[in-house]
Image (cartoon, rainbow, N blue to C red):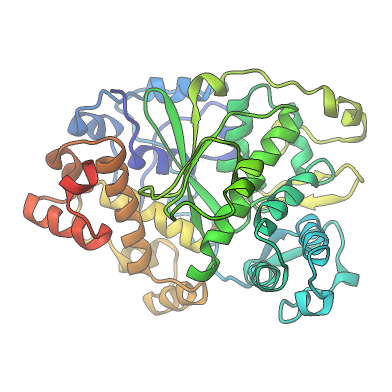
Length: 436
């Protein structure tokens, strides 16, 4: 089985934006001076992974140089904190359309406008198409929506409402995508679009020979808000794919929670391919579906009004909406997402002494400052490390059913007793129980 494990995809996801748009890139960079060899990773796993197949999968004109070269790591390559949203109060979210959609849904479900905006620092009369919000502001708004709006389907309606704004927002550039694969890649992996569609969610991408799995990772979301946020994100992806592609794209969804009472809402907004009590929440899509061309007739009438092209939206560049408003799009990772990718990359090198001090040095901040910034996001370095390890273990053991030896090697754990203890601590189950 040709298996692309997290170490490969976590790094590939952070490629330079121009490379994702179709430019040629070379797999040759390092994280804090630690090389990540793609060839060595593949041989250690015994999975037959190659750079060529990875690049060909993108089908977007990306050229791989040599499978012995190292995987491009984009903004993680010691660029420092300038490429990272260090504070939850940094204003990076293109929030005009998102706020408008949230207000429309919440007010139609019994919420009070003054209470919705209370404590958010958002003022409706000051909102403009080029207004920027912080992660803290936007997260506070969603907390208010969840607590005040009535109805079991509010999360799904919210995701659909966010998607309904796409043609007026910077997302209108996505109508130039040629197939479902390009569209999914732009929506879920590209940072510039993340800040005007799903600013609190970054998808980690895994794949095997037949399908691609997207696992959501959230920033600035509390445990009480998590399931609501998952439903919003999944509904938004479904609605965006359908609106832009002008047809329903076949997706399947898994949830860690048990089967809900309002299952009809799930089926209405997400479709019938649902599973519950799963190892982790995810979106899955078959590769044959990804290759399908898109039908763009529904939005062709608007092409003359928009001056945005997919190739024109690169890192930190200005783009223009349908209304002609110039907006600066950000190619930046949130701090928690940066840490997650760092942990994936550094743990998989099996190198010693790659931890919090080295991460702080990469970001050009002190350890104390880094801890304080992560606390501001409601998380910590240890919590993010355990999240990364847990997802990796679940993928290897529950999804791909690999042996303990293979899983331990992939996770950078040297001895099997320590591996078993780690898996039990992270997941509550033994490796054998996870493989059932």
